[in-house]
Amino acid sequence: MGGRVAFAFAALIPLAFLAVFFVLPVTGMLLKGLRPEGAWAVGEALEVFTRPRVHRVLWFTVWMAALATVVTVLIGLPMAYVLHRLAVPGRRLLRAVVVMPFVLPTVVVGVAFRTLLSPSGPLGFLGIDGSWIAILLAMIFFNLAVVVRTVGGMWESLDPRVEDAAASLGAGPWQVFRTVTLPSLAPAVLSAASVVFLFCSTAFGIVLTLGGLRYSTIETEIYLLTANFLDLQAAAMLSLLQLVAVLALLAVTEAMRARRERAVPRSGQTSGGRATTRGDAVPVAITALAMAFILVPIGTLVVRSLRVEGRWSLENYGHLATPDATDALIVPVTEAMANSWRTALDATVLAMILGVLVSIVVSRRGRTRRSRRGLALLDSAFMVPLGISAVTVGFGFLVTLDRPPLDLRSSPVLIPIAQAIVALPLVVRTLTPVLRSLDPRPREAASTLGAGPVRAWCSVNLPVLWRPLLAATGFAMAISLGEFGATAFLARPDRPTVPVVIYTLIGRPGGDNFGMALAASVVLALVTVTIMGLVERLRVGSLGSF
Image (cartoon, rainbow, N blue to C red; front, side, top):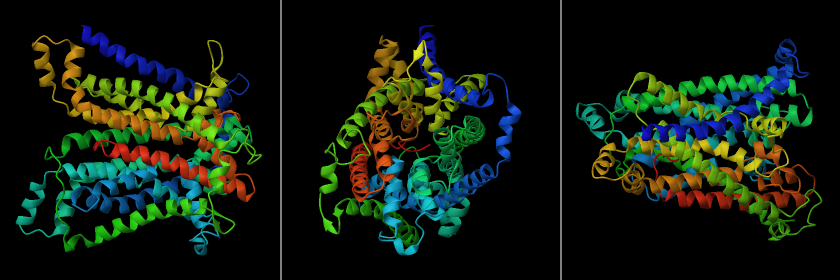
C-alpha cells in the first residue's frame, strides 16, 4: 500500500508541473488564436492555411526536414559502426566530438556556419551563404549525434554470434549486413530518423540565423508571427498543426522503441570493438570526413574570433567584459554569462528532480496490458515538450501566467522553468533505460533482510545509478545553457542570457558587434563542450539516445 502511495505521489508531482507550466501555456496560446475576442473564430483561424506564404513555409519545413533526415542517417550509420564496433584509436574522444554539435546552442551553430560560408569565410567561394544548402548542412551537423548514439548503442549490444554464424555459412560482409545486421538495427534506425525529422522540422536558432525571412520553418514562422507581426491567430494555428504532427511522430517513435527493446537479441555486454580490416575502409573514410565536417565550422569560429582587422588579437574577448563596448546591449556579456549560469543551475536542479521521478514511474514493469499502456502513455506525455515549439511555450507563459495566483510574467523563475521543460525529456531518456535494465531481485532480497524501500533502493540501485545521474545532470546543464527559443521571449533586456546576447549582436551592424558575437559563441561552446567531455567520461550508453 505504501509503495502504491509513493508511486502515485512520484507520478503526480511531475504531472502537475507539466499541466501548469506546459499544458496551460500551450493551451492559452492556442486559445488566443482560436478565440481572439472571447468567441470562437475557427473559420477565420483556418483561413491561415490558405495563405501562400504558409504553404511555402509548410512545404519548406517538410522537404528540408526529410532531406536532412535522409542525409544524416546515411552519414550516421557508418559512423555508428566505426565508433561502436571498431577499436579505433581515441574512440572515446571521437564519440565526445560527435556529441558536441548536439549540445552546442543552436545560435552558435548558426553563427559558425555563417562564419564558414560567408563571402569572406574559408568556404565563401562555394556561394551557398544565405541559401537552403547552408541550413541543410547545419541541420546535419546538429543531428549526427542522434543517429550515432541511438544506432551505435544498439549496434554495440547486438549478439555477434548471429553475424558470425551467417559468415561461417558463406555469406559475404555485405550480405551479412543486409540480411542479419540491418534488420536488427531497423527499429533503432527508424527511431533515430523520426527524432531527427522532429528536430529538423522544429529547428529554430539555426533557421532564424541562417534563413532570415527568406527561408522559414514552422518554428521560426511562429516566432515571426508573434514577435514581429503580432498575428496570434496564425501563430496559434501553426502551433496546433505542429502539436498534431509531433504527437503522431512521438506515437510512431514510442512504438519503434518498444519494438526495439523486445525484438532484438542482445549479447548483454559491450566489447572494446574489433580491429579494423581492409573491408572497413569506406566507413572509416566516411567517419573521417564527417569528423572534419564537425570540426571545421567550430575551428573557423574560433579563428575568426581571434582576428581583428586582419591581425591576431584578443580584443573581441576583451570587449565581453566592457560595459560600453556596444550600444546594442544594456549589460556587458560577462553579466549575461552569469545570468546563463544561474538560470541553467536552477533549470538543471528542477529538471533532475522531475526527471528522476518520471523515470522511476515509467520504468516500472506493468503487470497487465492496461497498466503497460498507461505507463507508455505517461512516457510519451513527458516527451511531448521535445517537439513542441519552445517559442509557443515561451509566449504561452506570457499570456497565461500573468494573473493571480500565477502572476509570474515579470518573475525571473520563468526562464529556468522553461529550460527545465526543454531538458526534462532528455533526462528521462538518459535515466529510464538504465532503470529498466536493473534486476529487481537484489532489491527484493534486501527487503526480505529487513531494509526499508528507501534504504533498499539506495543501497542496491544507487551504486549503479550515480554515473547516469551525473551524466543526465551535465546533459541538462549543457542544454539549459544553450536554450534559445523560449528564452528569446522571456529574457528581459537587463537580464539576458548568452544565446540571446549572441543573436542580438549578430543582428546589429558593425564589425565590433559581430566580433563580440563570435567571442561569446566560442566561450559558450567551450563551456558546453567541456561539460559534455566530462559527461562522456562517465560512459553512459543511454546518454543522447532516443
